[in-house]
Amino acid sequence: MIEQAGFRNAKLVEKFDPFLGTSKESTARNYGVDGVNFLAYKG
Amino acid sequence: MALVCPIDFDKDKLKSELRLTYTQVAVDPAGDYHFHRGAEYAAKHLGYDLAALKALPLAATEVFCGTGNPFKMGTLETGATVIDIGSGGGMDCLLAAKQVGPDGTVIGIDMTDAMLERSGGAARAAGLVNVRFEKADMTSLPLADDSVDVVISNGVINLAPDKEAVFAELFRVVKPGGRLQFADIIMKSELSENARNNIDLWTG
Image (tube, rainbow over all chains, first blue to last red; front, side, top):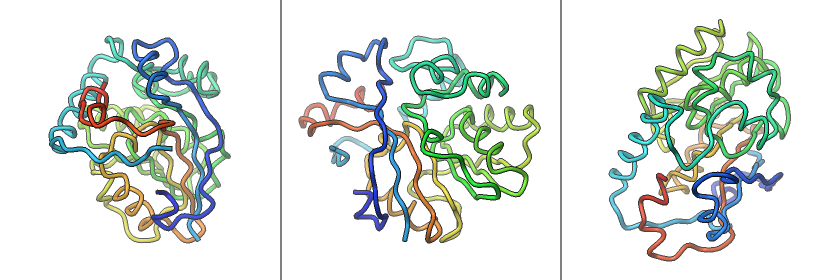
């Protein structure tokens, strides 16, 4: 989707587990939710 | 990566619910929420420099509820123009303002009045004059075409039901050669129709 908007070289750089230890930890795991860092460039 | 989430429920209602949630966080950061807040969380789970966070006003750090760390992808260039989509209490904006220096500009965008009050107050308390905060929707930014060097954001774009419109708007305002450097959440698989229409899963 990011590249469809016109950006180039979109990449997922790193993952996090922001819901670890919260009341939504199991929900996040059930839905396969990850925190991530993204990088993408214009032109 | 399942970024496309077409939903049938009222998008204005979602926006209203999100405002309520984050107004509550701004008013009562120690309340019971489904997400972590604060500097200790940011340092322990996301790799922020705790000393740098402790140097910021508590008003900015205690309501931080990001999902990643845009600064782990590189330091912002001196003199850069940076926007933060969904700036909340302003923690990332204040860090960015210190990185870009007095010749740079940081603009925090948020749609929640209570967060804008916090972030503006935090910037004043920190003595940072190269950062400002504006109330706007992330699909309609009060910025000129090709005017931004770097877009940062932290756990906010996932809250937009129309992500294509968000990325189109970001592409409009970013300069050629500029970049997105943001954190958010993704899902490994498509959500069911029921899940996509569950507003509690959007707002927590």
